Amino acid sequence: MAKTVKSKYLSENEQKTIRRWIPIMIKQKSRTEEQKENRAKTFLKLRYKILGSGKTRIVYDLKNGYVLKIAISRRGLRSNQREYDIYTRCSRRMRRYLCPVMEHGHGWIIMKKLKRRAVLSDKDEMTLSKIRNRFLKEKIVARSLREKNLARYKKRFVVIDYGSFRFINQYAEEA
Ligand SMILES: Nc1ncnc2c1ncn2[C@@H]1O[C@H](COP(=O)(O)OP(=O)(O)O)[C@@H](O)[C@H]1O
Ligand SMILES: [Mg+2]
Figure (tube, rainbow, N blue to C red):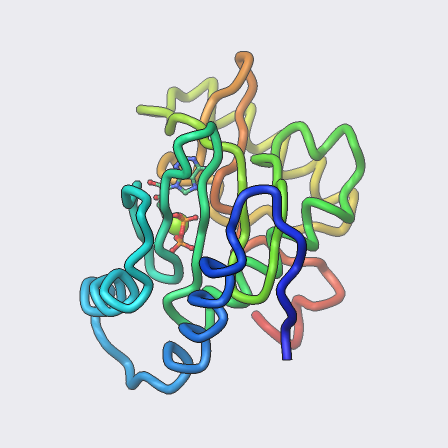
């Protein structure tokens, strides 16, 4: 059972609430994205504004420059874990392309808040393809380098949703 970790960002109560949410979330039958988000929102009742949500996670604005992502499906648990693993295991020079992870616990992760990037040009697509190749050299498959998963920071692309990245040795079992 996951324990409360000493968090710089979340109170013990907030962590407890998230911990109670996870088994409930796991049990719920397949629902639409919207239903999942609503269910999470109602259960968690966190005091933060919701920034957005995707297929796997609901994202809160911690209002201090960071965001909190909480799993709303089993895949969300994996996405959070994957982001933490990728961020901590990749080289420093590739980490520059990943939205910085500050903390993580069972079912949640805290990242820097970044503005999403608008439309991609052909030149951007070339840049992304180079970035993808550089990740491959570190045995990381940088999936989903798409507009909605990217931000720009100091003129560089930064991936804000890398929950779908894969380590090559895990590729076969989880493709
Ligand atoms: N680091 C971030 N900074 C700002 N907004 C974010 C950040 N991460 C996620 N978001 C917002 O939350 C939405 C859902 O987060 P995402 O990581 O894509 O979750 P999912 O795994 O469900 O796709 C994103 O589309 C984006 O609008
Ligand atoms: Mg997403």
